[in-house]
Length: 337
Image 1: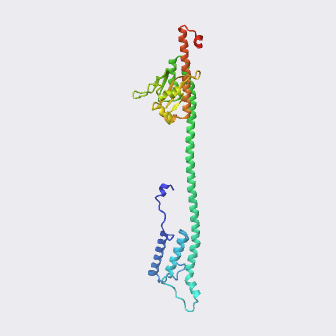
Image 2 (image 1 turned 90 degrees about the vertical axis):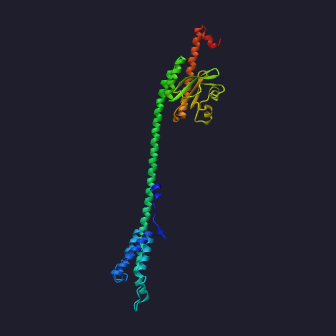
């Protein structure tokens, strides 16, 4: 029984610990029997009939309801048998013999009510116990079913996550090759492929460090309605956190959200792993909230390092190439001469 159904079901009504329905049945049965005795028989309370018809009320009450109702039926039957029709003591009849004669049948009713009623109560207790066990079993079954469903969902999520990680590793390898260039323009073109393949954002942007400013160099997914800032200087908390603090910022962290000020969900510095130089910033303006997990944040940091290293290497190569074309010695340039 669920709570929703149980709250609308009413239990049996009791009067002095006895079911009202049983009392009504007993009174009705005894009343009908007395009417039959009055109009169809001699009106002597079925004194000549064996077994006495009142046995029906006692037996039915005891076997159907239990000891209390059986005893109540015995009391009502005794009252119906003796009230107003108490047999007179016979001439020369001993008092004890007279008492035995008038109480013999009622005593048997009480004995039958107790014996049969206890048997019924025992069955009732066993039935209640079985019902409780059934309810417990159903509850356990429901709990097991829910646990199985949760386990199945978890297994499915793990399968998707593992498959996604496998795809991510392959995508990272494939996309990383797109930025293995010696031309900064080709690297900026390859960055879009790398970021889309590994992180899958809906909107992102790339900023390059130019002196004391982070200037917008490339965007993906921006619309005409977007009003994202295109340049950050030293007065900006985002500039200081990225360039000076070299922090990776996530919007799910309250302190980081205050720094981002609605400019994005993720932001991190582009740092060359070879020179330690900050060359810019990668910022994701729109990405699925479920993707803001520790694994994806770590992938974001790796992508930032790859882009920073590749761009710084290409930039230094272009500088050396330009100086070589101007007649400068690469060796001298490298030594700072």
